[in-house]
Length: 319
Image 1 (cartoon, rainbow, N blue to C red):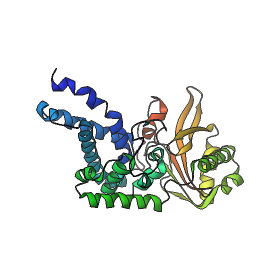
Image 2: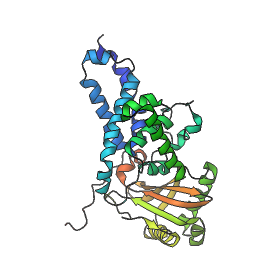
Image 3: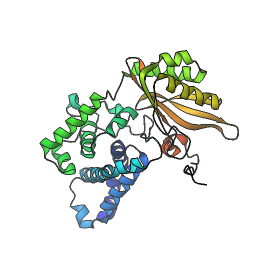
Image 4: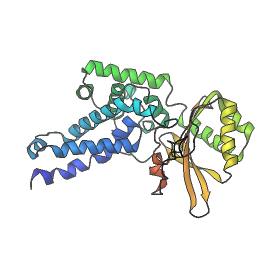
């Protein structure tokens, strides 16, 4: 049996772990899938002899996928500038990437909680990191790779790579990216959903921090606020306005890396309930500081179970 056939199982069984890694680096499944596909293309472009000479297939695939992601991140800022409206990361179900990260990672004091590593809050903060910081942070703090290996990916010395991860970690802590503890977060999220769903203005306002900000991502495909909505009054009016315009909307509890989140579900007389968005909160000291509303159908694929995605909306100002 030649190398081409014998290496397929070992290589292909890494796909889900690579997708998990690339998603954390890039923030969307579509970009992660492209990065993983490029990684496999590079593997199969090698000769049989070159593949046979790879002593650690998992390590080779991890390094190449990380370098691909590093290149994607370097161009991401320019692409974000052309994005229609606010860009938000893609939320994923809590169990999508189970068992793809180490169960007993080294340096626990320097590591984030693994189930938080796919949270919207953390992914939003990671958007402000430099590409090298983000790659170093994910590889060390989530996947437990030693700095000597990460250094080869980012083109820095191990000491400099350690500094990259430390800088990224300071950003996370400085923005309180992980927010409240899980129990408090989930209780506030449920109370928020009840207030918004019933139109209880007083209850909703009481849950909002004075500096609350709401961002919604429609990607130019569906209607969404093009700019952040700021302040208690504006956020409350925006949310309650959506409920009034769409009386069939319901909030259904789900779980992602953020803990309890809510699916925004619209009743469709012809097709039953239809997912139209995912509502995620960041909570600090018992109050909601950030509301993220993901309504771009291209970023809800893991929740829609094959429902058709509408074509992009016609840009404003064009027939």
